[in-house]
Image (cartoon, rainbow, N blue to C red; front, side, top):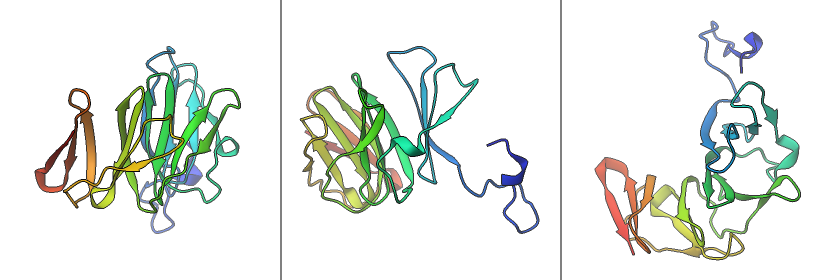
Length: 173
């Protein structure tokens, strides 16, 4: 935000934004100047002009508790987001809204990776879930590592490298 009224914490005006901090950003691989951001107060915003103007999507996402959003990622031509309390949503392009997908996990997801046909969300305590049906259902990957993971890359089908605390790297195939 550039609104000066939101740039103070109430304790001496240290310049910290009290809400609305961008926690994730994703540029469309398919549409020029289309960028999505997620925030710590559950907001999704989109720009279609490379950042000159932004549109909030509070009213276009199934996130009534305004849970923190930590990841937005395009997988093929689909867009997913993930966050706290097991939040995973997928953009319904026809309805122009993010719809919740059922994941049997209530912890925080910090990231999303994958390729068309295999989407993976991952986060706290070694939890990672894979969907092979566009987010309709999710399967626990049961990783051996129990620390939080903050990054992941596909390492050749069907393997994924997860990056966690204290330099841990976990390979799952």
